[in-house]
Image 1 (cartoon, rainbow, N blue to C red):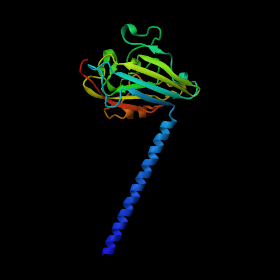
Image 2: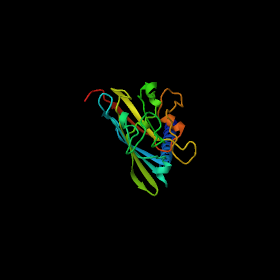
Image 3: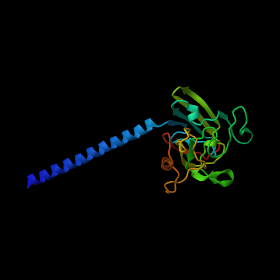
Length: 230
């Protein structure tokens, strides 16, 4: 009887170890596949500000989004759809020399493949804000080339948020990516004005961008928008 119990226990432990090893191998293979996908991406997004856990801004404004996009391959500026450098902003700063660019929610006229979302973006049809799916890329103030080689081009993009368009006193998630070449014209210029809730889960997030199609990694930053004044 004891030998029978011992044998069953040994078999149970052995089966458990087999399952654990199989799960570990599967997880390793999956992680390697994910890394391979990132490595093979045609663009890489890196967000410098805000950082995870930041308490940013004052009265819902005055916080930065500072990011770089590294486009891989030859003829980088053209492939990126980069139509010009820009120094822009609201009112009298909008689309004026020396580096004009339009300033409004939606697809960026200078870097038209970029999509930038916050999970708390307001809904205001008069100002063209359609909630969390609103692409905020065309609100960026500064766009320039920070590094350029034969096989890669780095574009830097910066925005100081001038109004509480993502709320105040709220936790939010910033999501940034480069949309894939959806029309196959060889240029990353297919970011939408508004990202749809493709998976119908009531949220606009990285899952929806994956369904839409991306050419880069998807960067997400979770932070707090400060409601206190200066």
